[in-house]
View (cartoon, rainbow, N blue to C red):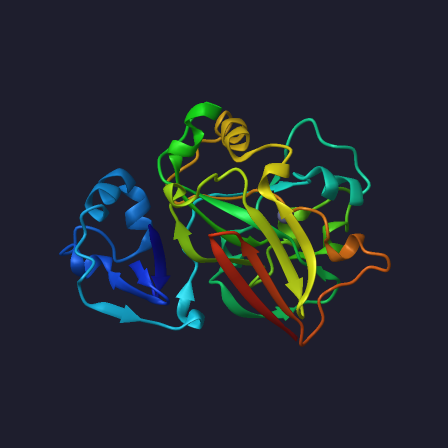
Length: 281
Ligand code: ZN
């Protein structure tokens, strides 16, 4: 099942940029917002399994799609979660996840124009997980059962601000407006043959810059959810950016950063793709 957020209304996706309005078809039992689905995820799944897919279909453009998890109470992000990216960043493979946040105002839909702030803006394609059932002290074995679905994310990062000050400040440097595009849809885990082994990558102006598989994560999604939920309860609609593989611009020789006019396309296998274009301030 794929669920899209178009103009603040949750749609059950039935075809290419087409879907049925969940609030309308359910007679108001679910929707219109995505968060109402996450808040009653088990009930929603049961309803959706027998939803009338021949209901009136609404068509939309890619530009009209909003973030599939638009109002998380918490956004978790993981640094250096692929060994090859830790290596290119000049740090040893971590023994515990490096956790930061992207402030929720940075989240957008999947097809956007991003204004470049001063500094060096870099790309980081990531698998993004959306929580569907509150998770406290969840075990690795039970972790995927607490996930509503996954989507594609870009953890856009301004590298100068990231290193200004006495300690790294990833959270702030990764939270400019438009720095957290996610989408295009929430894809439920049952749609994926192996949710722990998905091709992932991105390209700049058609040139592949990142290309890996999510099985190369140092801390898999179940391990991350177990470790995070041992500290903070993970709430329905919360978002986890699970880390990026190697190939970021700052690690290239010479470094390469996003410039006005660039187009960044990011994908996760069988999940979807994002398209960002960049303009100067
Ligand atoms: Zn990242």
